[in-house]
Amino acid sequence: MVVGVLLAAGAGARFGDGPKVRASLGGRELWEWPLDALRRGGAEALVVVQGAARFEVEDAAVVVCEGWAEGLSASLREGVAEAARRDAEAVVIALADQPLLDARAVARVLAARGDGAEAVRATYAARPNHPTVIESSLFGAVAALRGDEGARSLLGGARLVPCDGLGAPDDVDTPEDLARVDRVRRLAEG
Image (tube, rainbow, N blue to C red; front, side, top):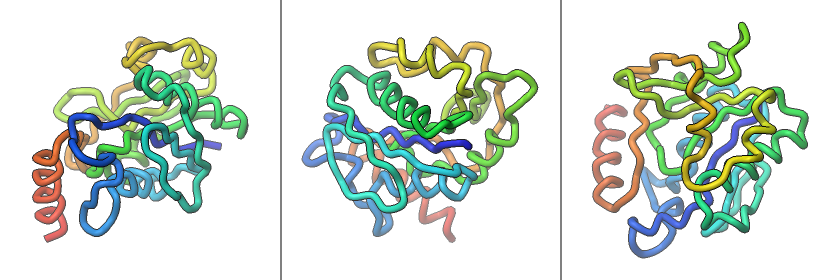
């Protein structure tokens, strides 16, 4: 089983008032977009890691990361640990502040699994980003991660999969980013 893990634990301090994952985009909260991409892209179960902000989620397990202020690795450890408890063979990871993530990119990185690859990463314009697949053989190494680097140190040998034209990995860090992403989203929808 492949578990989709949505990392939504950070405070989003640069966003300003209120938790950025709760910001509205096209009538939905920011976190709902990448969670939907994980679901439609082939994740067989879903885990949402929360921390600074708490919110209701349907059809997904919610894990609260009490150590969210440590950085990205803390929420990644929590999400992967929950997936391991569910006997996952792999996780596909997305960030809650990347609403333009496309289900086709998720499906493409999942299709690239196998042949000994312990990790698979999407690339956009040759730059690695999300979604990222981590096989269970790396779960122990994820448990040892610390700081705000996520799994970057484990992904040097990841299989890279071009996902140009399949959404975008644009982060929303500020209200201006949200406005820009909304313009891109509306143009893509026609």
